[in-house]
Amino acid sequence: MLRGFCCVLMFAMGMVWGCGGEQVMQSQMVEGEEQVGRPLSKLAVQTAVPQAVVVATVLRDGAPVIWAKVAFSRSIAGRAADYQWSGVTDENGRARVEITSDDVTGYYQARASIDGREIGLWSSIPINGGYEVMLDLPIGGRVRVMGSPRRIPQAEGAIKIGFIYGTYRKNSLDGATLAALQFNEAGGVRGVPIELIDGGVPIEQLAEKNISETEYVAALAEKLITQEKVLAIVGPNRSSQAVIVGEIAQRYGIPMVTTNATNPAVTSAGDFAFMAAFTDDFQGKVMAEFAVQELGAGRVAVLTERGSIYSEGLSQTFVDNFGALGGHVAAHQFYMSGETDFTTQLIAVTSSMPDVVFIPGSVVDIPSLVQQARENFGLTATFLGGDSWHNAELLTTSGAFIEGSFFSGFFSPQVALGDLSEDAHHFIDAYTAMFGVAPDGSAALGYDALRLVVQAMRRTDALTPMAIRDEIAATRDYSGATFISGYDENRHTTKSAVINRIANGAIAFYKLIEP
Image (cartoon, rainbow, N blue to C red; front, top):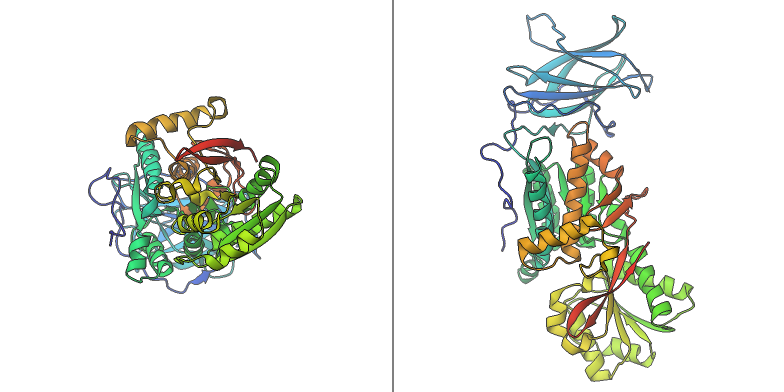
């Protein structure tokens, strides 16, 4: 089995994260279920002494207290309080306080005052060197810890970003690798380099060894967050995996930006889950309109992979839109991945006399499906697919049987020059020079997803997962390999699609579809 984790890029030596000692266990604290908003002041990277950061929200009867001074002091028996670290609350009642000393880790007390008049006092607050903690300070109540403490990157280390991908689509990792190199050449994030942590999922080997893909991906995400201490996750590129990773990322409060995953449900876990690809709602509509308006199809047969969130979701969107355009779904058949005999399904498909056949399934099954349809049943209808078709394996195993088919995709380097941005041209040139081949949709999404995360990091006032999440959500008019105008309330993108055609045994760009 391939190693689950390896450092793809090594830009720093020694310890990756500077910490000021072991974590202190909570004492007399109430753990909150919510997290407060983003910190407000600039990230200060400390190298000579340990550092801790406290983001404290002062509340009175649940309402924020503004313009209050919040000060912290170590709580050490026999020593008088010395409130030497302080900050002032903003319009949201939040103050960010950086604590530096020779011995940061320990218990603290805090007080809040307005115009020198004390309004609140709290004690038994555990603070750990190298971490940021978010607190609620209710006047007259006990301190509440809002979420888990987050590591603070140190200048001698690196900013870790986990990258989860199927090893059969390594080109998405290649795109991310290029983006990380470009950022590091430009100074990383405030002088701290990006380190990409490899989270490859060897799907074929998992199947051979009868290892649950679901359990493997869940453990992988947990390890990236709890052991590798990543600040964000890029990927996965499968919707079925992204749903699982999204739930884990949400639970830990770590932002995730998927690559190829297209099912709208991948962001349903909550506000830490984002997509870099378009959704199947858009992709299914694009292909239905193409079938009716471009190919003149009136009848369609659909072949769906049972149990695949991607295939079932995209099939349903296509069916709904095809019917809304006046088309007739003449047959809708299901199969299980790994089947080798599709006679039952193809009898129904052939007898329905379709103009087109839509198969949004895994590339491992499509070659057998189309070959049996052509050879055994003489089916002449045009085959259509989704983005999963953009895989070299499809061409090598399907040969002439798939010739003339169309499928939707994320990106093509063959788009007319006037329809590609300057940033896209730079991406194509750099990727081709680095890897010796032109980039495809997976490479483009790996590149863009990592750039979305790192650009958000560069815009943050404080390098914390919550602040990174807020800046990703605030993305507007992103330009890279592709263009993203922004995110909607579900953290779905608005972006264009391409339609590719299989011609002369190769994948060729056919048409650009704007949203």
